[in-house]
Image 1 (cartoon, helix red, strand yellow):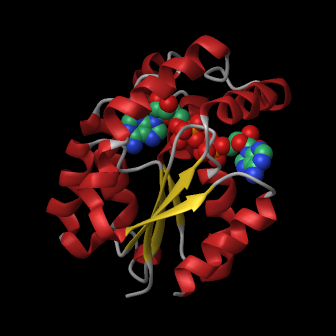
Image 2: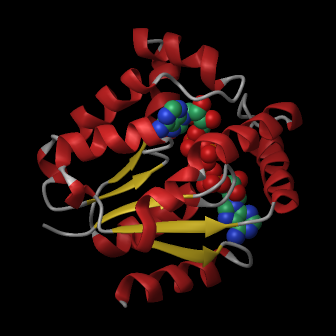
Amino acid sequence: MGRRILFLGPPGGGKGTQAKMVRRALGVPHVSTGDMLREAMASGSDLGRRAEAYVSVGDLVPDELVVALVEERLAREDAAGGYLLDGFPRNLPQAEALAEVLGDEALDTIVYLDVDEDEIIARLLKRAQIEGRADDNEETIRHRLEVFHGETEPLIAYYGDRVRRIDGTGSVEDIYCRIALELAS
Ligand code: B4P
């Protein structure tokens, strides 16, 4: 079994950006619930229609929908040799569901990207201009931050000493080097 890594961090912390770079280096699939939900919304599937109401206002999509999505994805053959989870688990019930399905060894390392709120808001407002994502407006960004503090941050204590806290500010390349060093140690 290869590496089983979780990228954890605030919205706009750079999880997606860094996970794509690490995936290339490790050769394991990048499983992003945000990307999967956006694909489902773009396809107009039943899941996509149900998810849209939550994603567009910055709320978490109900656990049972997301857990089923991830469970199905991790059961595929390409995930047998490890994976890189991005954005899941995002709260304690999701972490407990993952542990129930795959056991405590479901994750070997949690990379936590630490970025302050002013920087997050600036990054996401910039992305709004470039990509036009429906959930990248100031009101929704602030709500996503509240959800992060209330629901996702407790996972840092839950995962304890498996968490590697990385300074998520600076250039994308510098942050990648910090992560690569941490994963090699
Ligand atoms: P996500 O897709 O996970 O969105 P996010 O938290 O905003 O993170 P994202 O990966 O897009 O951004 P990143 O940190 O890479 O989730 C979207 C929504 O889906 C959630 O709000 C929720 O509704 C739903 N959802 C997802 N997972 C769920 C779950 N498990 N349970 C329930 N609901 C779920 O930041 C990237 C931005 O920063 C980019 O614009 C990038 O260019 C920029 N950036 C990155 N690194 C930078 C750097 N070093 N300097 C400057 N800019 C940088």
